[in-house]
Amino acid sequence: QVHLVESGGGLVQTGGSLRLSCVVSGRTIDSLHIGWFRQAPGKEREFVGYIRRSASGYFGDPVKGRASLSRDNAKNTVDLEMISLKPEDTAVYYCAADVDALGGTSRREDYDYWGQGTQVTVSS
Image (cartoon, rainbow, N blue to C red; front, side, top):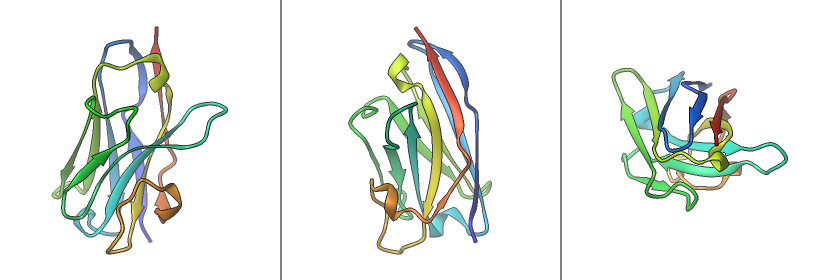
């Protein structure tokens, strides 16, 4: 069983930055693919980015160029950092874990475990 807990959300001004953390327990993060997704009110959950076991990463078009992922194996955490925030970045942000060795995708249905989410609100 893998347990994930997000933190770091809050209220941010347009143009600002944020850093969200995902603390993972149950397995080491270098044995997992970790994805970040977000869901705005009335919208489907949207892919933000992932970092594979190999530490390679990929980002969705809405955040490409503004987001980065970092992994701390000692703390078993994966952080999502975003800059140049826009009101349309407002959403609940979730981290998720894919245990499939060949995994690491942008599809939410491929992820096996999810955190409870953390709210990010970007004020205009």
